[in-house]
Every structure is written in C-alpha cells, then in structure tokens.
Image 1 (cartoon, rainbow, N blue to C red):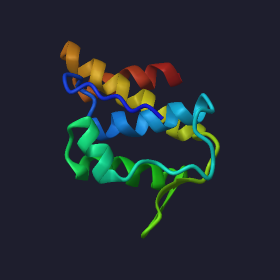
Image 2: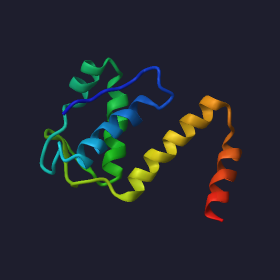
Image 3: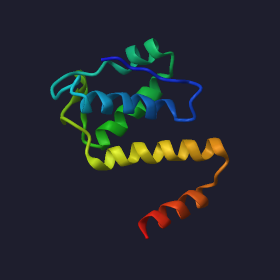
Image 4: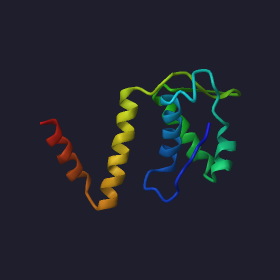
Length: 117
C-alpha cells in the first residue's frame, strides 16, 4: 500500500494518512485482515512524527475500519469506509478550501444550511 502526504497542504498530515487508507479500502487495494505498517516505520518513511501516524490510526479505529492490537499492530477489519467517514473527508476538504479562500466557519455553515433548505 502506498502512503502519500503533502506537507504544503492545509489538510493535517494525520488526516491525509487516514484518507490514504480509506481510499485503498474503497479501491480494494487493501482488504480485511491485512496489516498496516507499524506507526514508527510509516512515520519514518513519510518523514512525519510517529504520533501523527498514531492519530490517523486512532481515527480509523474510531471509524471501525481498523483494529489496533498490542504486538500485532493495525489490522484492517472493515472492507470499506461508511458514508459518515466519506462525509467527514469531504467536510475536511471543504474546510481546507474555505480557509484557503479566506472564508470563516460561520459562512461555510450558512452555505450548508442553504443546501439543506
């Protein structure tokens, strides 16, 4: 599995790492039972702090996509992210775009409310 992060992106590195796993699950290049790289090894290869990887793994665990086992590492337990996880990724992307163009959170929330109307 290939992990890529863009340190110049406004998306936090941990979120980028988690998105790599979600995308691999969606494209079926990663399947249940497979192990993810150890956090220390992945952090070293990406040039990020190990805690950044651990935060990404914790988020994936909270979404029910992986299981973290002492001595066994991170193991995929779900075939694909649920709709909520995909929505969370989309919201992070919207927030990053909004920050980039100078929009505040209140303005973004107003746009979402308009879309629900």
